[in-house]
Amino acid sequence: MLEPIELTPGEIEEFKGFTQQEIWAEMADGPSVNPAVNRCMRACNRAAKKTRAELGTSEEAEFIVAKEARFRYLRAMPPLDSYENVRDFIACVSFAEVLNLILHHQAEDLLSSAKFALAALRLEKKPSRGPGRPPKSAAKRK
Image (cartoon, rainbow, N blue to C red; front, side, top):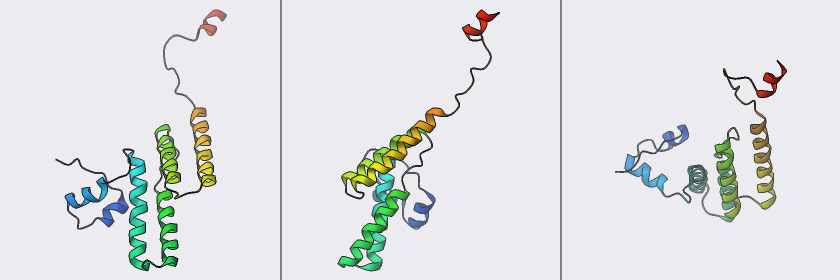
């Protein structure tokens, strides 16, 4: 039995009228075991397929196809709002660089953003200890 695949709102619209088997076949052939990388690649491939169908395969059209595919890949990357998303973001950036979707200096800029996000996450206020014994330094003062 195939496991269900969670769809984004854009994918729901795109796959309207498809059977569950067709949806699974379309989405299951991902390049990675990382779901975020798969999501980015699906967005990239769908954009390329759609744009190529609209514009054809001329040299000029392929430039536009590549630009749209890259844009959709980057838009599908996870937000930098949690440790897990930062990890997935880094995986997406690395994969995009390997595929030459982005240039090395663009990858460096994106990875720099991930570093800032990690720093911000580390600085977030930690939850308080709650009820319990006071810290030892406070107990000695009494």
